[in-house]
Image 1: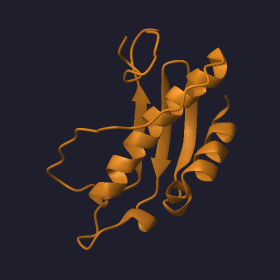
Image 2: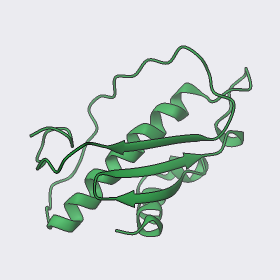
Image 3: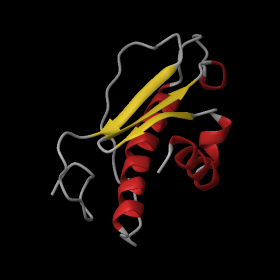
Image 4: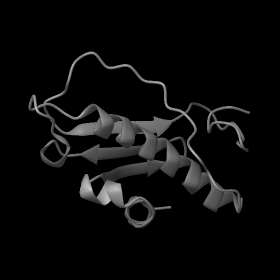
Length: 115
């Protein structure tokens, strides 16, 4: 799927992503690169809100899985169950996140990078 198609799908299915102004910069076989500007994702300390940073990371992996499911004709639905992440300092600029994994591991009901 193209970056434009993925961005439209994301905004249609997860309206929060549109409010966050998330954009799809690139989509490749093993990764999807997203960006989100600071302004709609800012916190009280003028840094990126941690929930926004976490959401962008989840969106990226979720879109990668979606693109692979479409490509392979897989009718299963993807549900994010957990996203372990720890951040100690806030960022001050646009957030960019890539969801991806090395290699071409097949996926099922496991995380996208697991067998």
